[in-house]
Image (tube, rainbow, N blue to C red; front, side, top):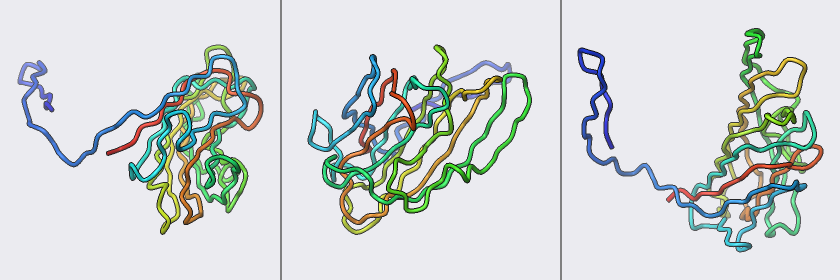
Length: 209
C-alpha cells in the first residue's frame, strides 16, 4: 500500500509503505439484483452458488441503492438454521441513529428503543423508515460472524444510510447490532422491508478470508 502525505507546499506525495498482512481478503460470493420488485431476497447456503458455511469466519453483505416500494418501510433481516425452510430464530438487537435534515436542523444522535428486539422470532429492523421517492434509497453493510459455529451464538453488526420518508427529508445513519441466539449453524439470511416489496437494488455477499 502507499501512504499519502503533504509536503511543505501542500502537495500530495505517495510514499511506498510495503504490504500489511493479517487484514484479510474479501472474496466475492454472490450478487442478487432486484429490478422488478420482490418480497424478499434470500441467501441460502448451497443454493444458487451461495456459500454461507464454515468456509469463512466472517461474511459481509453490501446493500446498494435498495429502494422500497412503500414509503416509511423498514429494512429487515431474519435468519434460518434449516437452509431457508423456516425463518425466525430468536434474535436480540440494539439500534441507534444519527440524523440531520436538509434544512440544516434537528441534528442529533439517539437510541431507537422502538426498533430494537428482545428474543424476537420476527424479522429484525436494521433501519428506521426509508423514503420511497424515485431518488431515495438505502445503502450499507451487514457483518455476520462465524455463522456455522455450533458452540456460540451468531453476532452481527450493520450500518445503513438512507433518506427517511417525511415532509422534510432527513439524512439518517442507523447502527444496529445483535446476536442470533442459537448454537445451531445459521445457513440462510433473508432481507425484506416491513411493508411492501424491495423495488430495486443489489445485495452482494463476500467472505472474509
